[in-house]
Image (cartoon, rainbow, N blue to C red; front, side):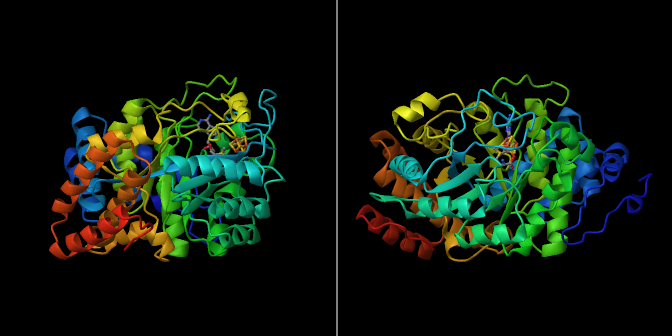
Length: 475
Ligand code: SAM
Ligand code: SF4
């Protein structure tokens, strides 16, 4: 190592900025790599240890096809060995697209005159939730623009409305949030409504580059956003999601910064992020996107594999911004959650006239518009278990990914059985006959693979109860 990272290191202190761009670039520029090093780093990750910045830089700098394949194979092995073959499904629900910021990449930006501004009222939210429940959704993320109207009480109310709607066997069991940064008191109000994860993406972690995309509005304050999830932690909201919008700046920098953010949360709060998201910049209403920092499919796949290895205990989310074929491939490298049946236009889940009028007025274009059942069909085909599990969150087991990761046998005892039980509910209540037939076959196979007579017996009893109409059974 030719440089002294100590020179750049910002100590991790609560509520204090922690990104030093020079430090990150020094690592990227000066860290050598080799086959042996890559193998050693992968071995470290497979032994369940988080990687440090130098190791992440060595993976980033591994560019030959052979080394990239090793990294992808390492991520695949890690996912398989630690998480098994479950994929958690969720749907985004856009509640309001008013926005006082002007992020140049976003269709909701205040200067976008073409965007019709809509905020769903309680009745409209209920209709949306009913439509989501009708197809079998159980886990949502509510999304908001940044606007005075969408204050913490407004967001908390939307969460409560979402939980209150029960249609048939349908109910929403976990509501996550993606909204603007708040003060500590605001996070407390939203937490009290019973949310799961609060997600805030830094977009780009480079302070100077950040400025160029966020010229005005509250979001122009880079540090306020950077420390947002510290305030969430101070509010007792320890279930937080970080992310970067890939395409705004050099992907290598963002990967390093996501790991740096993870280290910061671990150092200050003893808990890393619950999830990492890596949205890739998509065409947004009337906005020509620059090509300078475009992330190719190959780099995108590589960076996801690197993140999987770098932070082995964290959930990783891949959204419908990406096309189905790429999603299917990338899932193998360690993604744990995907959305299915996604609509990002305001009111679009409700099959009302209003929704039809609003079609194509979303924040950006999605590239995977398959229905939830189509996504599930493909998961079954790949022998992945679609999961709607919310057990840990409802049993008060926060940090579930950490448990999956660190508690021996946790996955066999809890995660896989719960995934199967929620999948069985879906098959009974919402799946077309063909899907149900294939789904039950997959469940039979999974039960055999559980390889523990006691658990298999318990599972068979519970599956019988589900077939008889009992719902929401979990370990
Ligand atoms: N307004 C809040 C904020 O900015 O944090 C939350 C909602 S915003 C709609 C959610 C995320 O969408 C942003 O954090 C950004 O990463 C992502 N996003 C915005 N424009 C996008 C685009 N053109 N393509 C892909 N993702 C985009
Ligand atoms: Fe508003 Fe968020 Fe879009 Fe920026 S990314 S314009 S803050 S909705």
